[in-house]
Length: 350
Ligand SMILES: [Ca+2]
Ligand SMILES: [Ca+2]
Ligand SMILES: [Ca+2]
Ligand SMILES: [Ca+2]
Image (cartoon, rainbow, N blue to C red):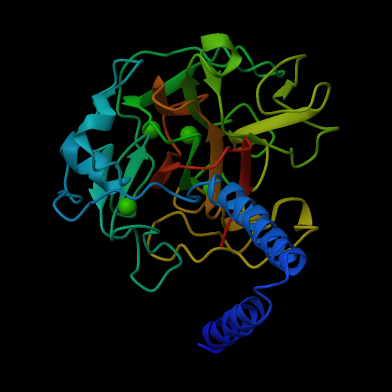
């Protein structure tokens, strides 16, 4: 209000000056010149408004059924609530493993007091290499052995098991320049099978003309825990979202970002994410670690660019490696299209 009052007084003073000097053409021209200056500053204001809205493109999820075992429930749980954005929505196993019970949209995983409250709209999607809910997560659900074409370490020939894939064909809104989503990766392989062949992984693939020329690409990678000891790939020239020549790691047992329970003495202790009641909680020490104790990455967020109106495929893929037990799991939540031009990035969030 103070600003408005000041402006009105300012205008009154200017007007008074104008009327008081109406016989003086040169002073009138001066005033006109002032008005031109104002017009210029209006032009600056117009330029500012040209930047448009920023942040997430809101969707109305109020009528979206977001808890249950249907694929519509899964879609609503990760907060994609506008039918016009979705071409297809399927869940299948590349290793022909039974998928019943391996996915579910839930209001909360584990104890209600833990750090796993949904980030958006009161529920999220679970995907696992075994039972998605409950506290027992070490089940080979069957199917065929598979292969991991993206593994290039000393264990690259190790078969995969219980592969699960949730595939979404999506159409970006006309104002979207990117998207982001939030997730937590869990595994019973932590910590005792870090740096072994039991390197369970969470791959999230994008197939979009705007990423690597339409080649199917993994978009959730980050810095490695120990790049001298282990890395998943070296960024190639022209590759989207990384720096040429740098080493990167996928979201997997042998790579990065997990909350340390005891591995290697936990040289960089951090406050672990409270995952009480999930069945993936830390063992107190190496001797007692097994298939009912594990860890998680805590909450992560991946952001990625997309072109306005672009049709693309997003695939959430999780698998056991080496055998089908000691399951791994992921919470997927808060998928949002963004108005902003988006820098590709995967990092921990609160
Ligand atoms: Ca949600
Ligand atoms: Ca399994
Ligand atoms: Ca374990
Ligand atoms: Ca496993």
